[in-house]
Length: 161
Image 1 (tube, rainbow, N blue to C red):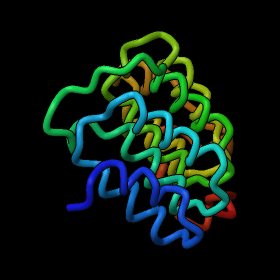
Image 2: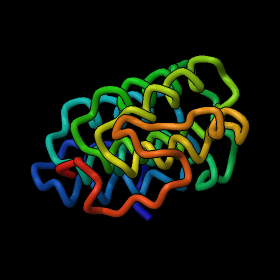
Image 3: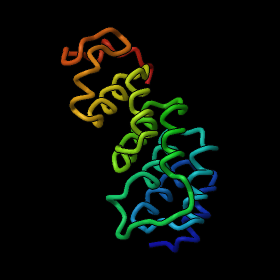
């Protein structure tokens, strides 16, 4: 396996597939300050959704790490920002997986409630899945006016993603 320094350097490679693979290779290493900074920078500057998604996954997925990660960065805040602002529904969906570990924090709960109004059905569904059952049931209609529990098909999804 390449050294961490080589992987961090590869995050700036001209080929997006190399950037994506480098991010994914970092996924099984404990996060340190330099790695977090490089992944946040990649996710903010990257134009290819698959590469942004890989960077977000590495930051979000505690299950892939062999050790608990300690960092001074506000990763939860970063994930919330991506959930609210990324143009790709697939990238936004990755953030919800990462927010699951902090789902009782009030700011996470607020972001998940906002996500119930996302244009993409898969975001609304995933956010609703993470919210507590009682709250989920209390929210009887979504943005499209579909009653909770109603069958919604892909044809009902207004998302272009």
